[in-house]
Amino acid sequence: MAASKEPLRIAQALAGAYQGGAENFFTRLARGLEQTGAITQKAFIRGHDHRLQALRSGGVSAEGFRFGGPLHQLDRFRFRRALHAFRPDIVLTWMSRATNLTPRGDYTLVSRLGHYYNLKYYRHCDYWVGISRGICDYLVRGGVPADRVFHIPNFADEGEVKALPRDSFDTPPDRPLLLAAGRLHVNKGFDTLLQALAEVPDAILWLAGGGPEERSLKALSRQLGLSERVRFLGWREDVTALMRTADIFVCPSRYEGLGSVIMETWAHGCPVIATDSQGPGELIESGETGIITPVDQPRLLADAINGLIRNEAARRQFSEAGLSRYSKEFSREVIIRQYLELFSTLKLRP
Image (cartoon, rainbow, N blue to C red; front, side, top):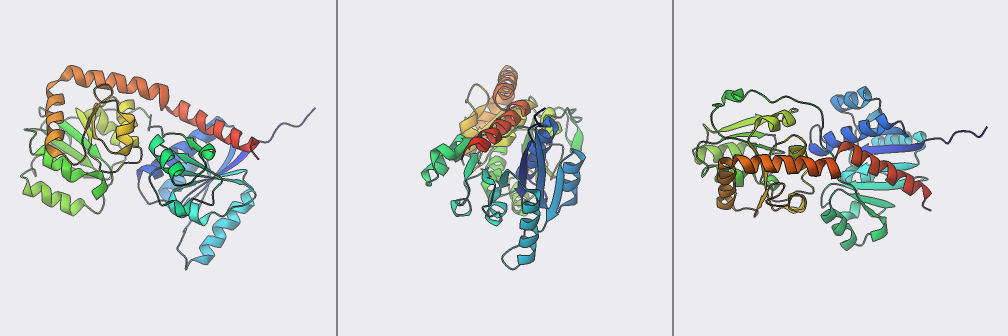
C-alpha cells in the first residue's frame, strides 16, 4: 500500500502588537486552518501570552519571540533557527517586521499585505497576498510580477454574540446609537466623526479603541460640546456584540487597507456608513450594502447619518444585503478554502 501523502507544512510569522485588528485576524486564520486538518502548522509570533494561549487553545502550535531590532541579533538567530527546525514548505509572513526578518530559504516565502506598506521590506518574497484589490494593484505598480500576486480578503469574527443592553455605559436607551471602532490614530478619521456628530442631534456615539490620538480626541469632544454624547470605551474584545447593539456603524477613515471592520458589520447585521478610503470604498456598493461619503467631509457624513437614522427600512435593507454579500464572498468557509487552494497551488509551482 502506498504511503499517505504528508500534509503541507505551513509556518506563519507575525511580529505584531499586543492588540490590533491584524493580530486578531492572524489568530482567527491560524485556528481556522488548523481545524481543517489539511495542513501541519506552526505560528511564530511576539511572545504575548494572551495570543499564544488563544492560538494553542485552538490547537495551533505557537512559539513566542521578541523580533527585536538590528541590535538584537540573538533574537533574530533564535527565530530563524526555530523556523528552520520546523522544516516548512511554505512560510506566510505578516506585515513589515516579520517579513523583513524572514530570509529566503528552502521553502516558498509568501507575504500577506494588509496595507500599503513600503515594498522594500517585501521584495525578497516569492509570492504576495493582498487583502484588497487596491493593495494587489499597488504591488503590481510597485514592480511585483502580477502572476505572483493573489487577492484573498479577511473574514470576520463569526462567533455568536448577544447585543448589550441599550443602556450600557450610561447610555440613554431611547437615543440613536452610533458605533465606531479602531485604533485611535489620525488615519482613522475619528476627528471627522466627532465634527459630524456635532450636527447629529441627540445621537450617542460609542467609540471603541485606544491609541495615540485618545487625548486629542477627548479634548475635541469637549471643545465641540459632545462630552455628554460620546463614550470612549477603550480597547474592546467584544466589538461584534457592540455591533449587534448599535443602530449604525460609522467608519470615517482617511486611509484603510481593506476595512475588515466592514465585513464584521455585515456579518453581524449592523448597517454601515463609511468614508471613501481605499478598502471601504472598494467593498461597499453605496446605496446597496451601505453608504459611502467623501473623506474628511464632516457635513456630508452628518447628512448621511441623519438620513439613515430616520430611515429604518434602509437600515434593514443594508443589513440584509451586507449579510448576503458577506456569506457569498467573505465568510470564514470561503476564505479558509482560498488559503488552502493557494497553498496547494504554490506547492506545485517551481
